[in-house]
Length: 502
Image (cartoon, rainbow, N blue to C red; front, side, top):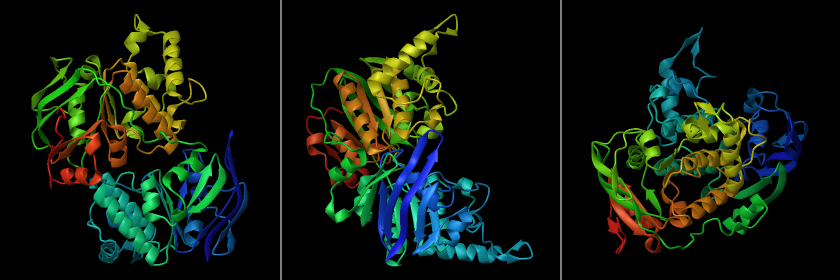
């Protein structure tokens, strides 16, 4: 039985045809992935289903009945709930108030908080979560807020639930919890539309996958009938056989060293080195201290003791400007909030860290600034309309390239990359991997923090594993194994490859 049927849906924005005659069917009770690169039309289609956008033309049938949603309430009335990637909660209100904000129990304008909290606890318990109904949302972690968004959608008891990148802010344990929730919803007969750039999730959870590309329908495949390579090729329209390929090359001399780095209560006695041309991964569960280690090296977080050396010389790094001046580049994990300057132009985003190098008497040289932009645009295949376009309007992949280019423009020798491919599509991932491969071959030393073990295992020469602020593994690529890394990450094993310089 068909839950959702789209027939020839079109939607245009100024200068862009977001959906071009898209037709597809979603069966009742299935978990159905909608996949494609950024700009493929996935989110536009979901927003039409969620009542945020009107379609220009086409037909939409829900349970066989033609529908056209003019508002979110129209979509909810038809049994559709959407969990958007951008969280939409009211931080000053409690968990319970956020979940039932449109259906607060009570009479004569008075909220019955006992009933409200009872309903919320019942919903939380049914999903096996550990969140208090009375907790203010602004005191929750990002991952806990994501769970509240999920509970908010489930509170409507909708038959069709759309999840747009639901695991983007979740740790491994929470991802497992979400898997259990989705499987429970499916067992209850609910229909799930699942959008994710993480193809492993698609193959773990979904029954079928529909591919969109450049606003057009490409095809629908049963997950049992396709593999990851074939799905990627449908998404990008070309072979990406090099997506996860490590390029062997000779490593140079020791370029970067950390000795005994300690931040009380966060991490202790962190010691490792990077050679020129070496890509080293740092793996570990959320809260293990790996992000804080990277921030400490870059001067965002102050450490209590330990030394940092570049080319054998000890350097003092107390602020990010000290790191930049000593040849260290940094790419944050949170591109949206602390990576891009959303309202500034693409050119300004690239050059903001090197203004003194392209200025004379404190006057910025437009010619030098434009030359730098053109150099990195060509070298990194960055796409934008013109140099004055605001970076907020670029795809996630192109934004990430600009953040990386900004770090490289400082002339760094060492690059620290935190979640370098989070929230970008497979085509952009492939380009980022190729860029990293090229940088390592040119002699850059690269440190990669990633939550995606396949990424770590594929692009890194070796991997450091962190557990509770200490190094429990130093594993060469020939011995890398997901189970081994996870055992080290959970404190169940320590493993140091023979011959692997720490």
